[in-house]
Image (cartoon, rainbow, N blue to C red; front, side, top):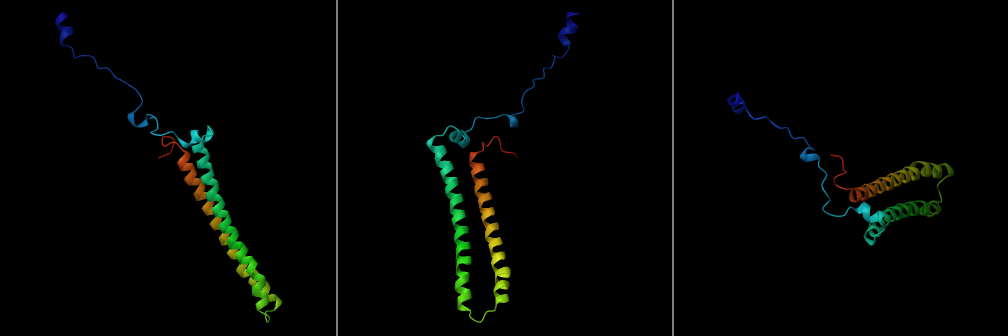
Length: 129
């Protein structure tokens, strides 16, 4: 009987745990999110950079709209022979589409700024693949 126990193969042990790819590693640097929530000077710098980029986009859009709308009285004053309906057609067919294009540009730029800021603030381990 002792010989039978010695000849049987050793029992296999199964070790289970978290797969290596899903282990959460400590970030190599302090995430910007904690810098912002702790209100450190670095966090304040991140927020100021976002605000500055958003302000730059807003001022660019405002400058484009002011130059467009502000130049209209000058254009209408220079064209003495322009009739009333022609002015309204110019306003309807020229100004509003350009205003829409400027607005779309601003929204796209603002979303891009926010996405870049979110990418900076997010911990690399939290990002979806």
